[in-house]
Image (cartoon, rainbow, N blue to C red; front, side, top):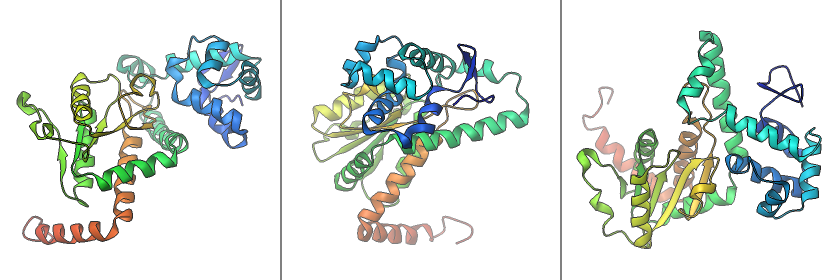
Length: 297
C-alpha cells in the first residue's frame, strides 16, 4: 500500500493520499467497511479533527469497526488514519490556487502535462465510484419530467452551466441558462413552481448569488439538483439531489473534467429514457441548423 511514487511521509513511510489507498482496496471491502470508506471519501475536509467516537457517531458505526478499517489499510489505528486524512486535505486542496501553484513551480513541461492528465483520469474514476447510480436515475427523471429546467453556475462554474444548457437544449425544450450580465436578476424564475427544476453547479467557494437562486426556487416549491465537489457536508441541505464529483487539478486550478463528463452522461441518459421526444427534437433542430448556419452544410 506504500509506494515510492507517493507524495508525503507519515511515520517514516512514503504515503499515497488516503483516497488512493481506499479506492485501491475498495472492491475487497465488506459492506460495513464500504460504509466507512464512503463517508471518508465524501466528507474528507470535515472529519480531520474528529475524535474516534465522534466519527463513529457521524457514520453510525462502532469505534471498533473504524479501528479495524484503519488497520486493514495498513495503519496502526485511528490516529494514523486521521493523520493521513489531515495531510491529504492540506496537500491536495483543489480550490487553493496559490498552494497548487507552489506545488507545480519546478515541474517540467512533460511532468506537468502528465500530472494534469493523470489527475483527470483519477477524478473520473473516483467520481464513477462515488456517485450512487440511484441518484443518477433520480436526477434524470427530474430532468425529463420538469416543465422548465433552469441552469446556473457562477464564476468558473458558469462554464459548466453553459455546457449543460447547450447539451440539454439539444434534446428538450424550455432549458434556461440563468445569468446576471449587467447585474440583471434572472426574472424567468419568478414564476417557477413545483414542476420546475434548477440544476446548480456549486463548488467552493460557494457563491451567495447561486444560493439566492436556490432559495428562490425552493420557496416556489421547485426541485434543486446540485453538482458539486466530493465534500458535500456544507451544502447537503440545499439540494433535493446532490451529485458529488472529484475536481482535484494537476495544475493551478481545480479540474472540471469530471463534472463535464457527468453533465454529458446525464444528457445522454435523459435522451435514451425519452427517446421519441429527444429524437424528434434533435431532427427539428438539425433542420434549422442546416439552413445556413455552418459552412459545411
